Length: 79
Image 1 (tube, rainbow, N blue to C red):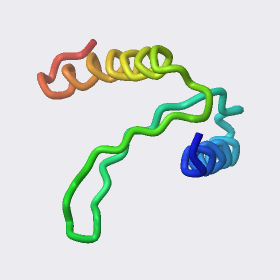
Image 2 (spheres, rainbow, N blue to C red):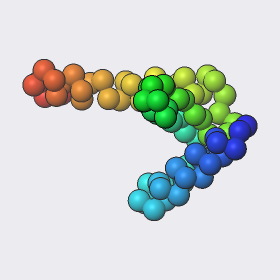
Image 3 (cartoon, helix red, strand yellow):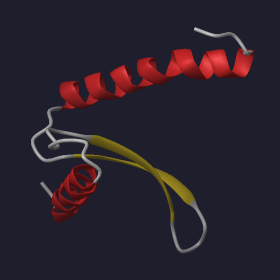
């Protein structure tokens, strides 16, 4: 794995611990990045050792966990 993924893992683990969120097991980070010219790109990082199928599962679970509350917010319907 790249040095970048190790740095992302370390930083995320520190932030989670500082806020009492527990110990980081694994993560997928999706970030919109602006390059020096202002062009936007989407970057996806996983903590070291996360297989593609686990990363996909984590992303899908995250989408499902926010779809309901987001839909309720935008339609004004309580879940």
